Length: 333
Image (cartoon, rainbow, N blue to C red; front, side, top):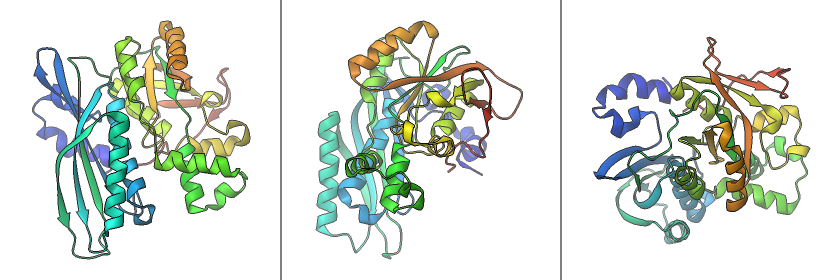
């Protein structure tokens, strides 16, 4: 079973309060703590050789770990407050790694005004055993005022922040893949892309403003790939969607051809926000784009659910010609 089959078949029966758990369909849970306030909670786990390499170093690993967790909070529109940390440690852990790891956490804490409140550690017996890091993060929000992937409506436009595929290009540069060599990126471009992989930017303020300005009630962050995460919204909202390939933002759009573009929009780790909004909100969203000084692109529209299994149709232009086929939408856990 993949991640979502596992959740739906085995773990959903354990849920007693669907409003708290969001039916296990979102990246966060919400707990009422006051008449007009809710505690928002999310958890992430990162495993060595899957999400990071030990040679990446403590600073980079800590940054990505905490930033990815913050991205879940961004996709809810909540205000991050605290986090708890758990991890395994090996005999080869040295003081440099731990010091760099703590330094990475500290820098992210300062940027997003959050703090550590507790956690746990365990020791693994073998140096060959993979390391695990886990973060549980806490945020707050006004009661009933969070973004959820189940709230898209038929006719809503689909928006995405930033650029898609940068993190994949950065990882390809780190691994020195043959795929990346044909682009002849400059040193400055390479540095930018590698940083996009190690230091994703959780769109906390964008999520907050979507709530504060009543622009949207539906969002998800791009962790598994643009199309894969868009598919999660379709499933949760019981909709299909139409996406326009040429409107999907990539940092190097002019340099990337048709087949390469297909690669980019099925890769994950960008941690940008996908959100829905009514057509009447388009002008306000473009104003917000200018205010926050981040790229926001409209890439398609949610439509009535189709009978076919494939809920996402990607067109190569807005005249609904040349449907682009995909063997998969993104990463599966």
